[in-house]
Length: 634
Ligand SMILES: Cc1cc2nc3c(=O)[nH]c(=O)nc-3n(C[C@H](O)[C@H](O)[C@H](O)COP(=O)(O)O)c2cc1C
Ligand code: SF4
Image (tube, rainbow, N blue to C red):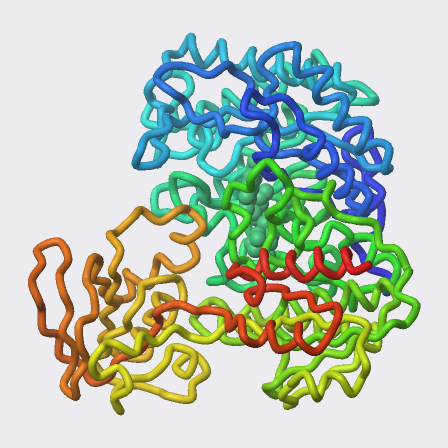
């Protein structure tokens, strides 16, 4: 298909080879002191090789760490000193080598880091300090140019410094940088952009803006205000705007959607800016599908699509669209696992659906050496499916055996709670790949060693997953009012207007509780462990369960179940508490059955456990486990 987003577009002195840009994302994969790592270079090289026309690496601070501690975002590079030039030149060369442009995002958080999260400091700067900071932005741009970059992106979004200045919600200043007039509110940005334009821009270098299209909060930046600001900044020299919304101080869920909102819900913010400027405008946020992207540009809503997480999920998105390989696209499911820091050693993927995201150096070359050897894959959860795809790609002949009548294993259940529906896209991806690669799938088959031996496999991958933990010692645990969480998620058991107790406050327990609470039940979750603060990713993933009525009782242990409810022990006070309820739902963890692996090991020479059967994990680690094992099969 002749997608509109594959057409070139001019941005300042440059011609972008297509209209897909990489929206800036902090990768947190440099050294703690900001030294650019090989991993960082390889990450951006991969994005460029996948076909994006312009790569904008995430937030780069331009001041040294200070006291009190302003938020700097660790494990990212720095543009605070000239040392950055040689460091960032490595990334520039890697991206240019793949035919893409690169512009670094110059950024000041305008926030203090406190144990309770980020706090605005925009009212605390003196006028002189802000004037001096303008100079630091220009210095940073000068260093970016010296590193060979094609421009800089001035960060004026996500409630960081420049977007706070634009926002009446945060900016209560009474000096020339106040938010009382649009001229004052944009003065900082305008001064910086004008100076960069005057002092640095030429036929190799330009300045673009990441703009806050809305604070999504009463009293904050509106689409009209953003558009008004853009008109001023275009005159100052900005040659492109990428429009997003939300952010640290008003809600990350508006910046990077968590499955709650429809695809493209922020497009109107970009469209409002586009009406006021003549330079290209990129829409950004929660855009996933090529047909929809095509329409946005064709219908004049935006000139460019800035993809953030979609290029984590599939860095080859542009090239696949350009070469008719849409059936190979892997879609971002908005789970926000990518907010979780990834360790330095490449062993853990940085994205749920892409096992190599931010671990690109660990990605082995796909060697076509399978010679048609048959491999049995027992279990169609994501580890087994990923293994099947890699093995088929290597030229093995995998056969997937699955006891149930559908693919996906636990991911099928994980997609049932509210706002998790996109997880089903993971299964859809594997269905498409198995079809494309001609992998044989046998559903509804209990794959015993005898059954598997009929295909005479060269190797057997055991991806049989887990069973639910049911502690038999608890009185009443097998009673008629007790059900398992998987049966609830699978809608084999339904509740309405009931008082329910869920035993186990892990992610599955809470998400199930949320589903039941929205279904009109009163739900209490019993959790033995003490409360611990949720990380950003978990808060965004299931934090609204609590605002939607789920009640969680930490440090409470199940003692017994009878027909009227449960007795639990309050571990803090060591007293027993009675809790009446209509039904009890067990979500007490999962465990692999080693006997299954042993049975296959007794029957076959090469047995490879993957996914939860090998080590309990989450979707991303299970996918990676399947991939690693499939690449390693000798
Ligand atoms: C892990 C993570 C890091 C991000 N870091 C930045 C950043 O450094 N600078 C920025 O402008 N936006 C950042 N964003 C926002 C994205 O660039 C993008 O605007 C947002 O996620 C919406 O687009 P998407 O739905 O395509 O991801 C980040 C988002 C995520 C999930
Ligand atoms: S981790 Fe989740 S939200 Fe982040 S890019 Fe991957 S699929 Fe998307």
